[in-house]
Image 1 (cartoon, rainbow, N blue to C red):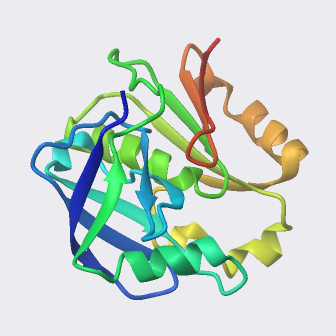
Image 2 (image 1 turned 45 degrees about the vertical axis):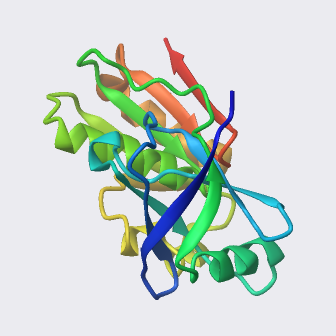
Length: 195
């Protein structure tokens, strides 16, 4: 059952990409989950949680205001307030409890889910290897200026298009052997596969 929460907005850093920090004492979540934030008209805006559950009672949200995207502008307005209404966590992602290697393939806002998972790996000092791949539909040259590496330095590889991803994965067979593979995208698109 989805519950509603009123989060305190602790900070909302300025910059091209924004990192908002929210707080609520009774909120719990798992790596890779997302919440919906509500506008004053009760419009839902989904955002993946970008921090480890060990960061609680605070949570981090990463987003980028874009003039051509009304939801991102609304989100910017919401997160400039002292409080914001949102839901309990949603999504069925389960952080792997064993020590097998982990491959994260991210696209778009899926970087937030990857951020949650990699931060959790670091905070729990897991011995597993984590391979983080950012996939883009743009050419690598066009993507460099908008690279998430400027604010998320643990990306191992940026690939352009499906063929680029497939070629890179072929070179990583040792890391991929018996690894968990999590593919992330928009907040309600997260799949976990193990092969």
